Length: 343
View 1 (cartoon, rainbow, N blue to C red):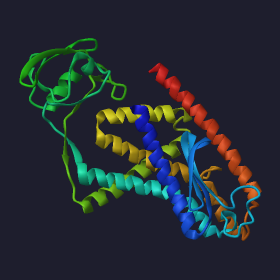
View 2 (view 1 turned 90 degrees about the vertical axis):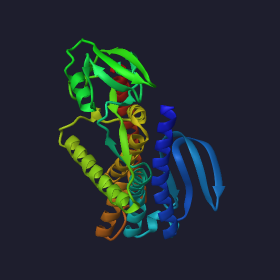
View 3 (view 1 turned 180 degrees about the horizontal axis):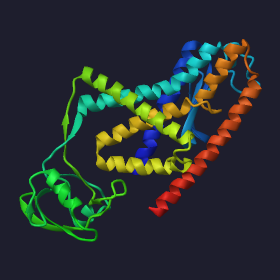
View 4 (view 1 turned 60 degrees about the vertical axis):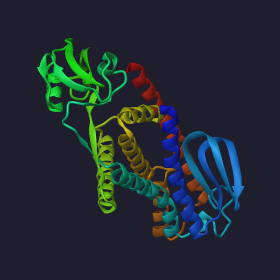
């Protein structure tokens, strides 16, 4: 299910991105030959109004094939290569822009129809992470913790303090109430990779406060802005050598993160989807050949030079960029698999 969920999320992000290019090109008057979801071998296609809509084998991207983009197809006066620099920028920017719009809409939906999550201080188990000590010991969602090592537990804060005070290798003895029945459970905490302290893999119960549509729009804009700054800061850290390219997550890593977000709850899965959408928008604005950012750079150069770069030369540069990106995906996927094997 995690793999299916990941593929659906990636498909939605790509679909929205490519739809931005497609709808902008059509409005400008650029003929579109194909709207494809995925790369490689064509699995399915249907033609409508002169446009071929296709589904391809590799679900890691997509493309909108416009007139005037390929070798031997530069004579069409309405084609992309014969458009003004501003029109080219509009088409290239529309894809990443739609990813930011999608993120905002996801946040608006969350806060309007689900609500802003707040951690409850009741000693009630909200989520139990599968595979962690609490799950293996038998703790389940909605269990009420009454005692820990013989001491009364009245709040979630008291419960977490008991977990933190458990010596390494020792068991934490819990008395819980489940469906009116009292149950004794022993759980041995493990070291939390983030904090370095003891943890058992549980989360407090969340309470949700729904917002009106105007407040949701404001929060959605703020969340998208803050995440954009956060991702840009992370990108700058990597460029300046503060982080390694080995820390990047590829398809396998994203699948693992989707699974973890899904375990926590719908809000977190939707929020992570918005995060990925912003990530995709920023990535495509980078001035790397084959990405939208490079098309914007070429259009700016054309505007400064007052004449376009030869289409064949530009196409070759984009082809080299595409090869580079495919190699990068293979390397990142390899790192994902190594991390997965090493746990």
